[in-house]
Length: 171
Image (tube, rainbow, N blue to C red; front, top):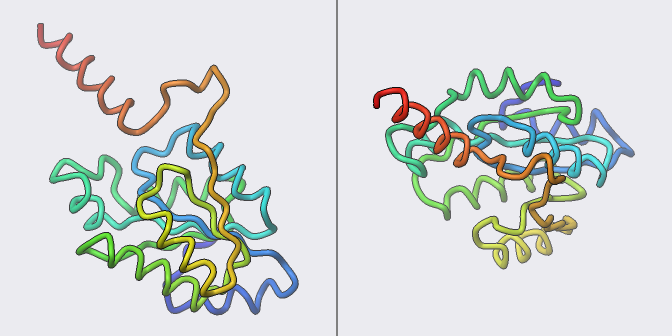
């Protein structure tokens, strides 16, 4: 798995000529089993999976001063260890959701993915659908699901559990 700079995105299409490229993006703060399931599902739609991670600045804007829990350098390293992921890059956008969507459009222009995968609870799915149509990218909206033994796994739930555990320790 390789870490990419935005300016290198256009080289991926050339390097993997004839391969189906899948793109997804997210915060991926505390990488866990649910993320692995998501990446495995993404990879089912093509040959090469490119993941865009939110930068620390984006994470602070979206989640407040206590986020991210895991900084972008560690998240990249963890992403490099995941079998389904072929490439990852950092979204350096720092202002609004509109800017995040613009970053996705920039990826579409440079990478020219065949498939764009999002979870069904992603914000502004209609815009993402229009964007995908504009660039002739197949949009796949996945239902967020996991096997029973994975229930309750999410970054938010992990953080909540850790906070409850810390409160019990103080009592």
